Image (cartoon, rainbow over all chains, first blue to last red; front, side, top):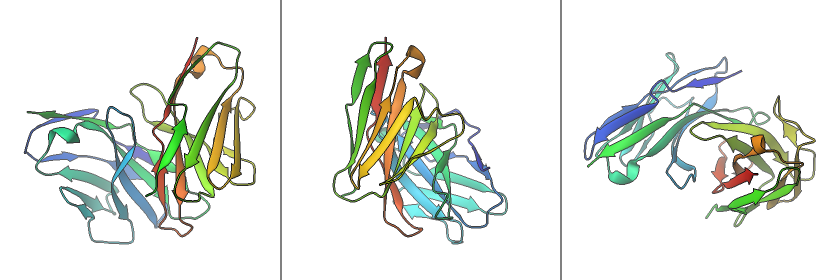
Length: 116
Length: 117
């Protein structure tokens, strides 16, 4: 079974600064997808960024980028120019590329606080 | 596009009663929907995978007779918590799969807070 570990329960960053959230995972599969989801106080899950394991290039979405290290099974999220609206819980998630095994496995989350 | 709604957003029920939660994909067809449970300050745990027109697949440890899932159409899945007890109080979130290829996305509903008194 796959596992996802987020070792930072809480992080804080000064507004406009850069912060990196860590995520490691364990799997025996070679093809899979990794995600970062944001859950603000409204509790609506929002997809931040997605990485396909067979792609070597790190995914980027505006101020959000990942550092995907497949051999190390590491998938960190970097948020640049942090904004107050970035304050939320962030969950790292894994999904198999196997069409018959579609569930998302989530990490325990990192609560990000933005300091004005 | 890709909006998923849940109804109700918050429900309070008495112990021993049943409550139904609806999950709808508003602008796309979802052959597969997922139901998650989230306790306060914890992560999302998958309860079951719901496929349109067939029986749901439950995760280990989830009581299928207590959490009844019906996926009668391509846009609607329902979760019924039967004979609810205070320990069933939680935040229930559904997601719907858009697309049929491996690069599909899951879109999440806004969640339903269930309080059992």
